[in-house]
Length: 369
Image 1 (cartoon, helix red, strand yellow):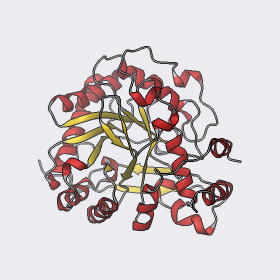
Image 2 (cartoon, rainbow, N blue to C red):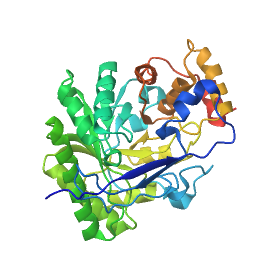
Image 3 (tube, rainbow, N blue to C red):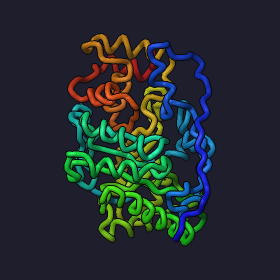
Image 4 (cartoon, helix red, strand yellow):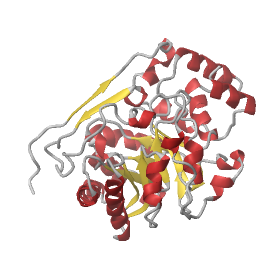
């Protein structure tokens, strides 16, 4: 079917924090994943399928989701309590913290090896995506989040094909956007089309199977979530993907999936960061056998945050404030998906795994003082 001759418009809106970053930190904070909001109006570009053009995105780009964006605490109703559904608890869920974050990869609850550091492609054209993916691969990244929202999966896929890195060494995650559909049948149909859209885009790099597919937002009710998830399970049963994941799900919404009794999600992307610590969420996900991945790891860092991280970094061989902020995420029991256009920053963001913060430093960072 011929693609609709429509356009897509994506704009970023930034609200200034109470304390502006120092000049030396601005190179990280003004980038898209560091901003407060991410407004998206979706319609299909002329060179891509329009199947998901009707999907909607919350106007505040995930952060308004049940208070995830800035609340100091999360209610018990949102957390939903500990899960009672049976699953195989991964070793890292019960392991001491030092073992949990002791390397560059962890085993997910299904046994898959998952690199803790991911490069999350942002909103730019396919050629930019191709070039940055090649740089990331050269630097050492092996985990990639190629979201449908970025509209550049084809450019990413071409880079994978051009790279000397074997496909078997690269962990690729795509995404499905279907939260606008209400009801099981409608949610299944839109999610199914989203799965197909991912595979069609990845053909540009001769990628025939994904390592992970992520449901970008939960549907408006339990029936919709079940329909969304059933489509992802179908994709897995067709041999097109190994691991299933979600993004922006509360524990109560995760339980809707776990109640289905089929394939459980292994990762949940959330806006966890030093400046947005989401009390209770990492533990609630861990209890369900799910690893949290931060999609906004360096957002909202204030001047005082940066000063604190710089002080701590000096005690670890002059690590940068951003390395300290990323290390805080890892030692909190989460992984992260970051982005940059700089080779130096790519290298910097990977250099957080052969050193550790002390208990006292972690306590200071939790208090941000």
